[in-house]
Image (cartoon, rainbow, N blue to C red; front, top):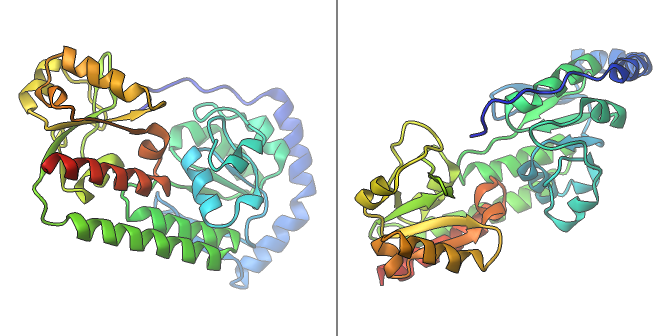
Length: 310
């Protein structure tokens, strides 16, 4: 969803840090190889279908996406995070973590200096400079990208394996699955509701069915009116939105007062659903991050759509 960007070159000082870290870690790397040869260690498939191998549970991990931070905390492993990126602000304890840059340009030198034993990334392009560094340091990289609601509890369980907190992670995952099962059972068979997913208003952007937001809609009996768009986040015209005849608009909002403003904007644009008050706002961080709070957002969304059905 983010346009291609130029990423910073690795700073000269990083090569010195790499040399020191590589020298200090040579004995440990040899022991790791012996452990793995003997069948020891932790092996988990990540969301790019790569086998990630750790010789022991992670104790100094860094996350490169806010949703990954939330998954780690949900798995009972928040104490084992040593740094994250800007915007990782939930749960509140995450705000105390050192920041190593933003999600599109994490700082390789800061990451190497922190001496992580696991890097949890999201998208490949922003992580690429760090992955090269981690390869040199023999630090595993795990890609986390849940694409459905059902994948979220699975992701929590895998975090539990990576950090050795399986009992806490398993309990959290089971609770999430129970909520998801109850949600889908409650709204199964309800009348479909046509929904426009607003990802931007000026200009107008939306999301297609490959988005996890559309998966939340499906759990509620909603239908994304631009679900068949050829790209994940297409720009669309007002005329095409009006022609799609959505019964409701769903938008991620930063503040509660954004929802009435959004409603007024759509009313001014002449959308019939807005004239009936069917413009809904849900906390953007909960709605767009593929983490445990998306279940909260889905429950709110389902209730909104059910009131619309009457």
